[in-house]
Image (cartoon, rainbow, N blue to C red; front, side):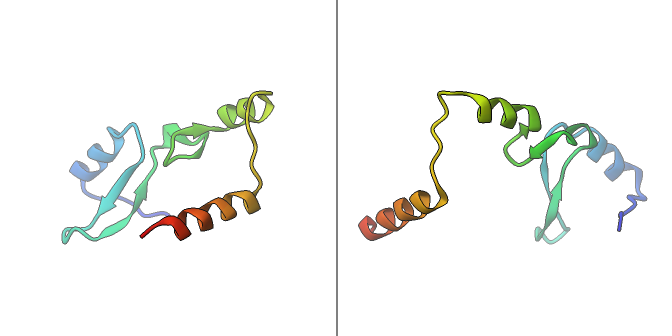
Length: 83
């Protein structure tokens, strides 16, 4: 369900945003993240990666792919070595 911003200063501030931003309440509590409409072609807005960039990376023969299992094993290894 969309949330309509009724006060003009907030709407103006959000309209000026050019990158994903955290939205916090008056008490500083994180409410969520605002992603500008101009960035709708971004798959992972928090990283600023577009669908085209993901596709280019997928087709790049120099890209090194690692299985989820290998990633998890590496994370377990790091965890074992951490104090």
